[in-house]
Image 1: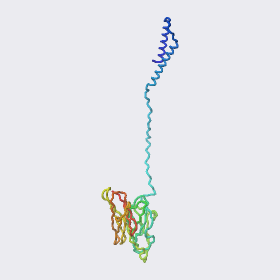
Image 2: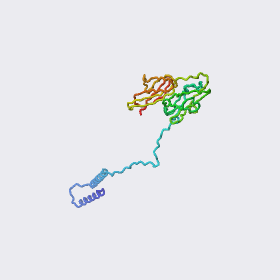
Image 3: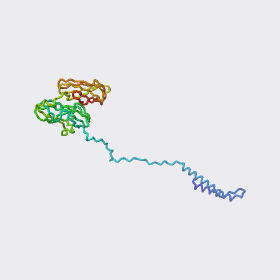
Image 4: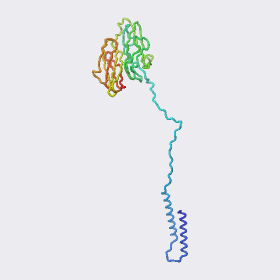
Length: 317
């Protein structure tokens, strides 16, 4: 029932009560003050209004739909950022060398016609690539002095390391001043640039030939080249490396040597000697029972060179 309807009902009841009081005979009943009726009616109306308010508060309201956050798609023209790759250092090419010094035969050395000698240069690898026996010492121009067209490097030269390159030569038969130019060549047949070299590409040997000089500087017994070959047998977990070194000398003599391992091991098995009755080559072998990779073996020639001839890298295939 609405508040308006309740009010009309109360007024109608009051009207009926008033009519009854007018028609009835007087009696000895206590009289009721008119304000009392209005007060009761007001209280009834208030209670009804309170009940309706409570009903409105406790009645569940229909759920309101909350706004849903959505991500706007990227424009179709936008592309993901491009990958960034490191830029190679232009100051460190793959193949580059530096001339360090003349180890033997200073420029202008005197030799008798036909005298033999060994020319040695010290060269440093200043590039980013490792040199191995596929790199060569190659005749470039000038006087060949009986030298070969090319010789393979005697071993491996890592970036930053130095190597002594030796070549057997013979003085020309006529008096005069002679110069021969040599260079390094990579496996692709390209010339390796030589810092501090001649025209940035070569290094040279220069001698003077004079008769009656007693043969000039005597040609000493020396090891001219050492080349390595590496093989592996067995599994990589428990195999064995065999390193073969081919040693070339210029004349008769005895060579003493020491194998140097990357783990620093030493002993009688690492030392040996070879006797040559003439110029030529002989081979020696060294075995290392392991299947590990990333190892290396060097050969140090104690006599006559007192020189280390490159490095053989050991990696299980």
